[in-house]
Length: 135
Image (cartoon, rainbow, N blue to C red; front, top):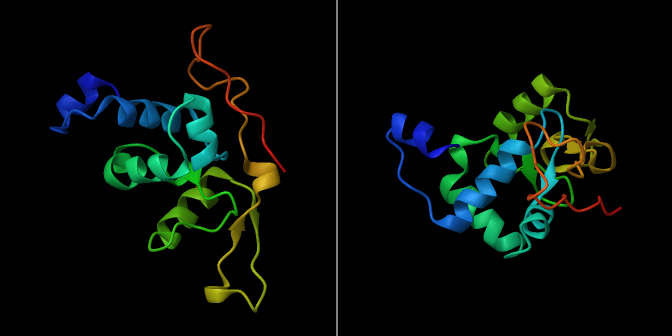
């Protein structure tokens, strides 16, 4: 979210690292996801826990459901909201087995994971490429 847009919505200024994490989240195309670790690797700073903390504190203003756990489990406490977004965007899901807790699907990480190619809205020569998806 740009500084102007945040100011228009009366939102506080973010720390520099948080701003960078949120910018990556905004680049992820609809129907695709990056893991917390992918975002940290893209930024070449921090790790999955730091990215997760940023998303927990500041992620509400960006498509937070596109930054996910590597195992494809939906964000605890936000499963239904995330699932609505995934279905609306056509994000690949794996249906849950009857034995799965809550019978909630998981993300199909092999198909949904975004490697940063053809960055939506940009990524110029000065922006590093996103990491390749690890399977």
